[in-house]
Length: 293
Image 1 (cartoon, helix red, strand yellow):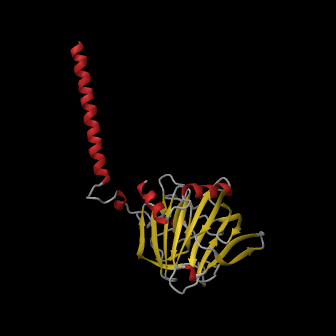
Image 2 (cartoon, rainbow, N blue to C red):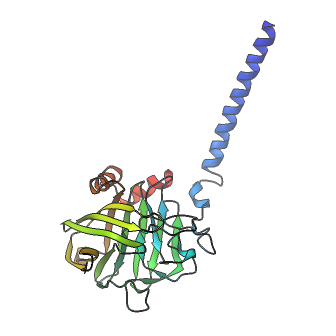
Image 3 (spheres, helix red, strand yellow):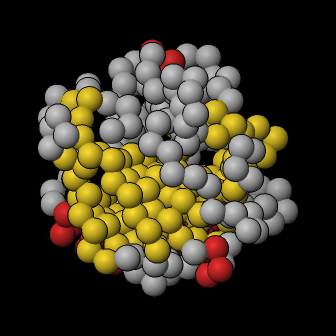
């Protein structure tokens, strides 16, 4: 009987060693399935962005609160995620999106780089801040998104942490540098505001109604360079600011980075999320962390 128990224990230990060894070998395979290519290179975030897929291609973290993605569609069943592969215009880049749903919501805190102060988004066919783009000049990876805006010749790169993210805009030489903040984008806005704390920091709230009837998101935006001019569009009917334009000096450089934190609790939380997750980290550092995760 003792001999049987010893044999059984030995066999169990042998199986455990075999299992651990097998898992380690499998782990090596998962890290590098083909040479030294990372697993993220085998992921295509554009899957589901056409047809009735209702997915978005932008940057997000596993279980992350922020989904920083381009918006190409403002309404309709196939526009639930804010993006559809058949579209040709980008209205801007907002920070919350739903994936795979049949009902629309989110699209909070839209930012759009451009070269003129224009508050109309262009959906009505008139002049607006939306820009034409081509899939030939568009890249989507886990935790990273990049696109070239044909209408303004601006390159946009996006990356995220869990509750914060970074926009990186590269403007053409000798071009005006404008960033539009649109809090009226997509859903019905119940209340919103933008408070300017300095020439590099803006914060506020967006309170909206869509699938969720009482959706609130607080935000804190920090620019890498001070803006030299600022214009608000007043919503006099409701007594609030819903859109703003910030102009930056092109003599200070072609690249502008915009860091943003969000919170569903309060504005202080949005700033704390930004400071704790990103702080002084560079765009590439945040991108690397996101893709490693």
